[in-house]
Every structure is written in structure tokens, then in C-alpha cells.
Image 1: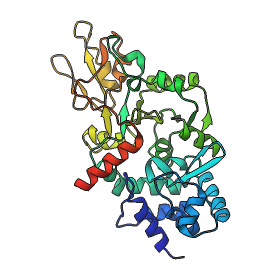
Image 2: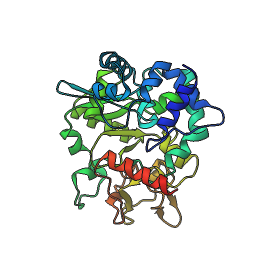
Image 3: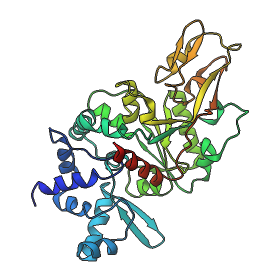
Image 4: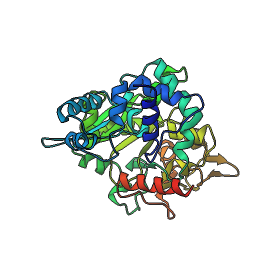
Length: 352
């Protein structure tokens, strides 16, 4: 097998909604070579974004089912492809770079891999991440910071959805681990990435996350809020994950805070911060708290709603309780399912 197998895998991954574009340096191929053995790369090219059993894949590829099944099991255990179990049946599917084998590298990332990830993000992947202008994440504040007079749908809140989840896991943040390994780390908490349902089952099975109950998940969420982290999950009504993101390391937030990109390329803001000027003491705590510098002081404290993520961190830190989070009247509701979001991203990229 030659390097061509890694080129083919790169091209295959690039067909995903969030693709895997080519670079002049070839750093994307270096990542694949570090993570995938050549035979594993050949196998990954056989997979699709849709769950399939080994027998289906083997039949299409004209391979021995038992041999292929063992290889798929090993690859999924190593965080190279995604796996779903239903009763006594096992399904495999191609994992994109993000959210995918980048995050699944959280337990094995070392300084070399971190450096490759950083180089790829800086040279190619950030542009790919926001090119469709279809935000991949929705931002939701914790419930205590939401105005009490709001009429909310279940997907407008987090705690009830968390309590309804059948399986929950927590893992370290791959973005912050990468930053620490490349000498750009921060002091924000590390074990903050929450997954639910089939994603949680996968994280627990392969040992990159630990199982927790709803009470601990909510405690982690509130501690993340107190630490100043933005609560962002996949931009769908179905709750699959919550990334508690910092403005310095998070892949999406860095595009906003370091590159000056419009938030809509990455984040769907469902809420906005509304200031009660009678209660506001102009202490400017909210200005210091806002992760995207959406709040400033003129004659009074002002919120730039075009920048505001609706994360609620300002409301939670306001000593005078003068800020409340209100659903935006012009909000874009999340997609029904993650697959619907993926199709919207592909359609937007086609138009480009």
C-alpha cells in the first residue's frame, strides 16, 4: 500500500458536511498517517456517514465478514470510526474529523499530534468549519439565567433534556488538551465535555469518557458556567452533546475571538442579554465576563446583539441581577436532527 490510500481517505473525508480539505504542507495526511495504519485507512474508505453492519460493508467491498468485523471493532475501539450498538447488533460509520476522530483522540493525544492538529486548524480547517455559514452549534444558558417570563420549548433549556437522557458521559476537552500540549494552555476546567445517548455509550465503551448521572452532569454544567465557559451543543433539537467552550482554545470560538469572524459561522444564538437599566449599577462586571466582547460602556452599558452569543455568563455574574436572557424574536430554531443540519451544510457548500 502506498501513500495513495491516505490521499483517498482524505478525499473521502472531504465529502462529509464538515470536510477535510487539502493543504499545501500535507499536514492533513500526516495526521491520518499518525492515527490510521494503512490497512485501517483502506477500511475507513469503505464506510459511509450512515450506520451499517459489518455484513453490509463486507458484501459491498467483497471482503470476508468475520475479518472485516474484527478490524472494524478494533478501529472503533481506537477512536477512528464511530460505533452504535442496538440490542445484539453493531453498526459502524465513518467518523469525520470534527466532531469525530479529532475528539476521539482525547486520551491518546501527545505533543506531536497536538502540533499537527494546531497546524491543520490554522492553515485549513477553520475556514472549512465556517464556510457554509450554517452554525454547527447552538448556545444555551443555564436555566437560572433565563428570564422567568419566557415560554420555552424543551430544546430551549438544558436541565430537563439532561435529566431525560438515558446515558451520560463526561470527557476531557480535546481543545484545551491540545492547547496545553502546544504551550498555549489556559486554566479553565478540563473535564467538561458532556455526551448523551449513543455518543455517551461510545465514549464509555472505548474508555475516553466516564459514565455519570444527571445530577453530576448538571453540577459540571453549573461549575463550567461559574468558570466562564460557553455552553454549546450540536445545533439540533436532539441533545447529543454539550461542549463547555473557552474563548481561547475552542475551535469555533477561536474563529470569533481571534479571527474576528461573525458568530453565525459557528454559533446559533437562541438568546440575547437584556439589561434592566434601573437595576444596573454600571459596575462593568459584565464587560469583563463576556467571552466575545459584546458588551461595552458608553453613557450606559450596551450589548451588541450582533456579537452576543446568548450564553448567559453576563447574567450569572451580574451582582445586581440586572441582566436576563430572553429568547431572540428573530432566532433561528435548531434543526430537528443532526443529520438535517449536515444536509443543510452540504447544500450551502454546493451553492458556493
